[in-house]
Image (cartoon, rainbow, N blue to C red):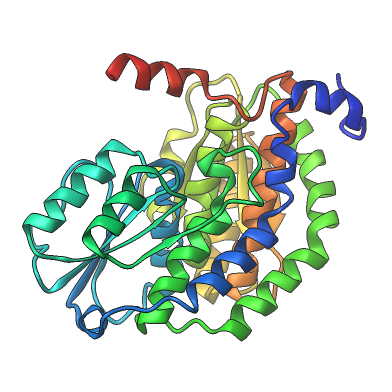
Length: 346
């Protein structure tokens, strides 16, 4: 087994320097927030009746985090459009956020054309390509970023740009209560904890070889569960699943008896910021899983604020899946089957 402290051996596998992208999350977040806070929007954008974020894969992460963190605070209905079409209620009173890291995602470009036909208010978060050209040609406001801290150029490894980019846009428009002080505090915490997070991730990765991780989370960390599942799939080339408390307590536990081969490993994201009833459910869920002789890896997510915990957990997932890919001898940057699928579809 490869030594996860052997940087030369790791570099032989990580030829695209995925590590630099994983370790630059805090810098991505800071850049995205600072740059969105100087954007200007027409006044009409601040008075819409609903918001739809259109995104796929890593470019959809922001929607999950916004819904998890601001579910009870965002002042208009907010939804994720995760395909070629917009919800039926989108009209001239709606804001459509077009999210595509690459700027060439066909589903999002389809939503863009539909949004124009419905006279919706349109904005975008992207690094360029066709989506950037579309916003410029139509004079739509957009956050078009230079991904200088994502050398791998993989969207899932540029989460800081997409997540804080969208949060920055919505905060700038006044739809979510997020301030520069909030973001600066969370980013500073992430920077201070980075070495500790990486060390913990190496230990967890070694426990997960040839296992199927099932990530369990709740409330503000629900978006992390979705994102971490995707990171396992794409970065580590390892199948994974996730479930959210309290929903999982109504069905999942009865599915632990079979198959009898114990290849599942539950990663439970624990937080002292969860509500008391969710903390109780977390503990009871853990008890049920262990009574079924299935491994549980407890992750105590640190941070004094919900945003700090989200970033902590986001970094942890990035490091765990990076090092699991290395243990498998897999290039953490490559996505051969996704590339194959897109080529065949084209």
